[in-house]
Length: 171
Image (cartoon, rainbow, N blue to C red; front, side, top):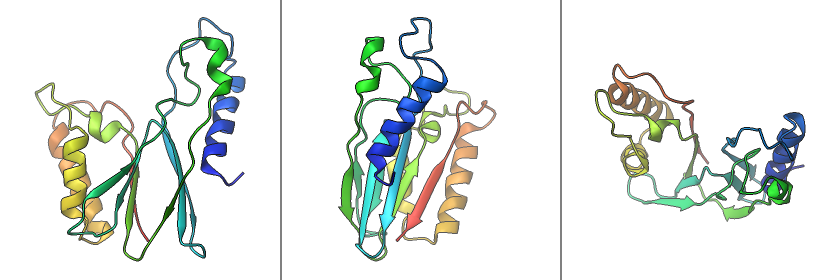
C-alpha cells in the first residue's frame, strides 16, 4: 500500500485487531497520532495523510509563510464515541505539487505540548510555526540545532512530557 490515507486506515484496523480494542468497553480511549508522506520526485508531487498531526510546508524559505495541511481529527486505534464506529474511519489523502527548495515538516505533538520551565505554559503551535519560519532559510543541520536548543531552554528542569519528533525535509 503506497497511498498514505490507506496506510493510516490499515494501521488503524491493525491496532484495533492487535490490541483487541474493537467492542472492548474497558479499552483505553487513547490513540496514536501520525503524519505520513509519499514523495514522488518524477511526478513532482507529495501525498500526505494525517491522524491529528498536520503537515507544514514552506515554499519560500526565509520569506514565506507556513502553509498548514490539516490532518483528520481522529487518532489511530482510538475511539470516536461509540466503539462500533471505529472500523469505519477513513483518512483524507492530500496530493500536493512540490518545487525546488520547498521544505516540509512532519512532527509529533510533543514539542508544542511541552511546559515551560517553572510554569504551566505550553510551547504551542503559534510559537512552533514562528520558530520554523524564522530558521527556514538556514541549512537543515542548523535548524535542527536551533530546535534542540530552544526545546531544552524551554523545558528547563521540567520532565519531558511526551515523545518529541520534528522531521524537516528540503525538497
